[in-house]
Image 1 (cartoon, helix red, strand yellow):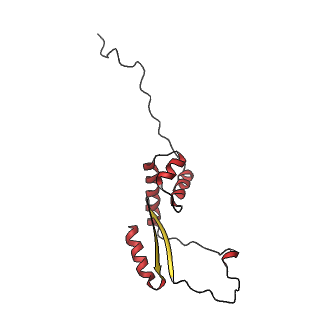
Image 2 (cartoon, helix red, strand yellow; image 1 turned 45 degrees about the vertical axis):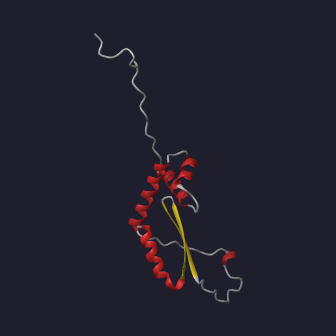
Image 3 (cartoon, one colour; image 1 turned 90 degrees about the horizontal axis):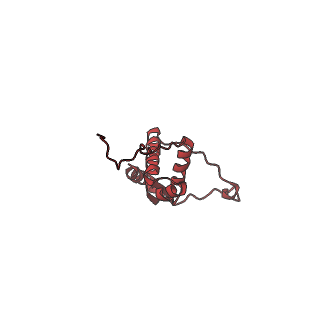
Amino acid sequence: MNDTPESAPSEAPATRRRRHYSAQFKSEVVQACLAPGATTLGVAQRYGLRRDLVGRWLLRHHRQTQASGPTFVAWAPTPEQRPADSSRRPVAPEHVRITCSRGDRDVCVEWPVVAADQCARFLREWLQ
């Protein structure tokens, strides 16, 4: 007497192999998500990945950057961004414009410079 039905396959089912990605590749995908106008779905399709996987990598990136705190980014203006007459003092802008991404959502905030502290509070609350 045989315990297995005759219709059962004689071979073991194929096991799915888990794919592993390098930290460099994950970083490249996350940076692509952080580009202005980028969506996790668009980036996932471009790299041939699942959207939820890209979302997890992006979430992990946001958590790591929040844990490490803000970082300073040095900026040197290119020649075309420098004023033609360096003896003249540049006029301070009246508004600050900040673009942030959180998951699939992007927000662009334009705020008066005189109320920069209120802008910072708004962004802090939105990013939490």
